[in-house]
Length: 161
Image (tube, rainbow, N blue to C red):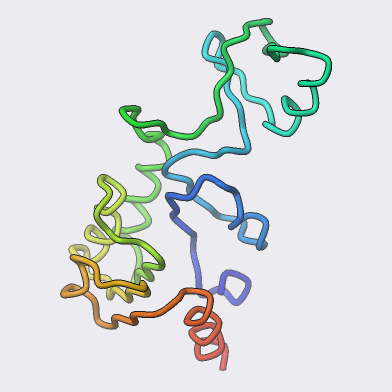
């Protein structure tokens, strides 16, 4: 959908980087990324894979910039705020979109659930694809209860057809 110019961005709560692996280029990770590590002392970031490679010779691993041992994956843990830049970008895209496609979300985790709600309040149409009903189904133009791996390829075919 992105390659066809039908998708402006993916806003995700996932932290695994699989959207990028699938070829998506504009991915907004509301809960951070498990693929990056940040030093809690100096703030520098490094690929988690690079830190993992050093574990055989360096335990605990140290920050390459300041030497600190206080490294943490850049995922948002319980009680931590979501990255403000990601949240602001998601809200801005929601205000501008014509159609919000919500896939595989229960729409009960806030503030992430506010993104599609803001899109609807700003005049967008919403399509919900989820295995179970969501509290926002009533705001959607289309609700498809099904598995995303089965539904999305069909939506892609219809859009490009």
